[in-house]
Amino acid sequence: MSKTKADQIIADARRYKEEREKGYREQALKLYPWICGRCTREFSHKTLRELTVHHRDHNHDNNPGDGSNWELLCLYCHDNEHQRYEEQVRYGGKSTAQANSSGATFSPFADLKSMMQKR
Image 1 (cartoon, one colour):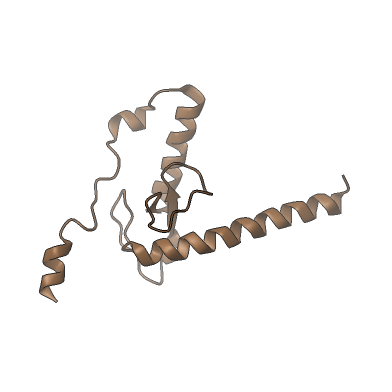
Image 2 (cartoon, one colour):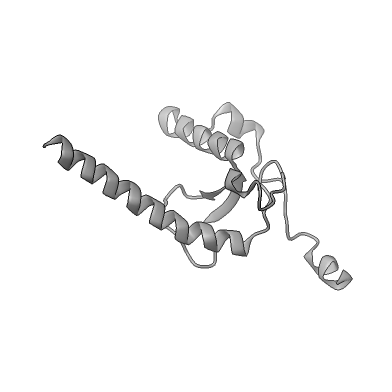
């Protein structure tokens, strides 16, 4: 395979990934508050680029419109989540981080009813 053909394949793959991400990222940002689901850091328009969409089942092609396979995570928590997943795949079972963690601790909609009544 020539270098230019390989370069074209890589460029096409990157473009496809970016287009796919735009769709589900925009949907997730409309559905969920701009808060990391793990560390509860809040984001504004200025820092929104640091908030990522995590696929709970790790399948980036599984993008239901209701957002049930997504959660918003900051860059750091997202990297940590994927590291834990890689450890589980590589070594089996639960990693130390998974054994000590019970998943998301923040529920952004927990008090939604009272917040809506205040308006």
